[in-house]
Length: 126
Image (cartoon, rainbow, N blue to C red; front, top):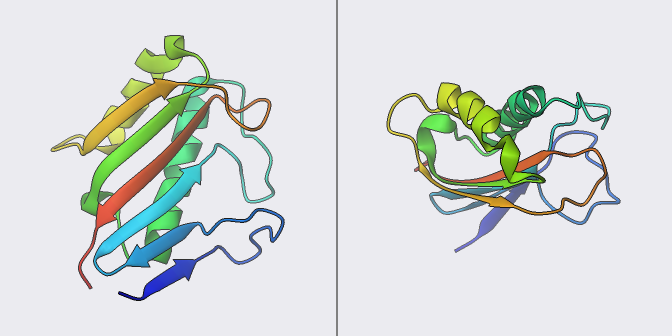
């Protein structure tokens, strides 16, 4: 099955990843972090960071022709499990009905200042 890769215009060539991959009817998006278009971390607040991550996830899915309605699995990575409740409140607004399957773990992230990272899998027939 052929796969298609998708990247935002201006994506950093220094980072060896694709923002999204479509393999048939399945779309995988790489972990999205709370950065703006210039690569700056948007806030030091977990709620604001989570909101930005969801904006970035939405944009990544759109590159491959998918949306939050197509998401079947989400992985959430938090630098501190004490952020769970605040992250979960934002999460709830993104998936108010029939939320996808989800895993949430506490772990260090690759860049200082990141509090949350989220990746997703979507089923989006073409």
